[in-house]
Amino acid sequence: MATLAQELTFEQKLDQLARVAIEVGLGLKAGQELVMTASLEAVPLARRITEHAYRAGASLVTTLYADDEATLMRFRHAPDEAFDHAPAWLYDGMGAAFRSGAARLAITGANPLLLSNEDPGKVSRANQSVSKAYRPALELITRHQINWTIVASATPSWAAAMFPDDPPDVALAKLWDAIFATTRIDVDDPVSNWKANDAELHKRATYMNEKRFSALQYRGPGTDFRLGLADDHLWLLSPPTTAPDALAKWPLFPTPRPSPPAASSSSTRSSMRTRPRTSRSARPIRRVSATETRSPKNNSLPKAQMTALFMSTG
Image 1: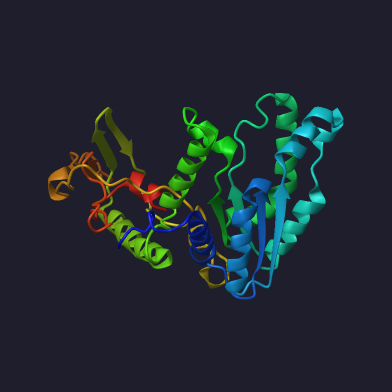
Image 2 (image 1 turned 30 degrees about the vertical axis):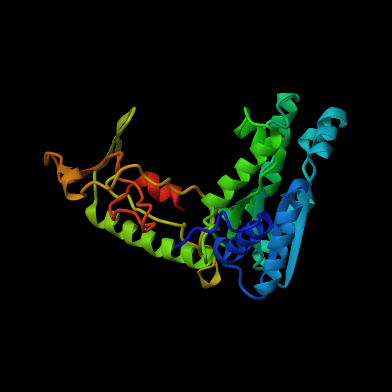
């Protein structure tokens, strides 16, 4: 599939990202409500996601914005006892929305160093208070009873942390490029591309479950380690969901994808060997070489790719 990264404008890429977030990341259904959180810096992406949500049939989109400057004002001027408090009414409302079938989307990209100079005790207490208040609503997410997803939005502070040696505008552009690449929006039809990727990953998960390897051996430049696997391990893609109509498809979206390799794929047959059968649970060891990565020609992966590529492709 042809890459369009050089042909699309930034606004077009942002729109593609919003579309994929709704149609692939959430799989939003007509009639669903959407609860979204974002920083003020992510307003352009949030607005595009809102548009695509309504185009997909959302009944209502409610967005809660966070302001870094307001957060700092709290840590610098609020009374000490305030850090043992969280707005339980807000999280109770979110939980009620989830129990009524609302989807959840978080736009991430907050300044990773925002509170680095603040009182660590206050930061810890504030986090604990939020965790306690949000727990009932969060359990609906962690149990996959609703469809939810996470979408990245580049911010100057995040870009500076990622690319500290570049000027601010260059660093921000690089971070956006990385986000667009990892979310597969730089192709003719990103939604179809994600669906094809989903089908391929299911094939690989089935292959891995059938082989029942006892360990994975990773070898490459500077790397040589073995990862043992539990006897009853199971390879999965997006976690199973108890939500209606199998709503949660890509809850950890977006995620990185592997870079095109400098060498072709090695033979799967030659990269396997069997450990001595010392017990009933003894199973083959899968060896993963540095050359077993994605082919840039057909955008596909060897059938027997392992953990790293399962995780990095979604």
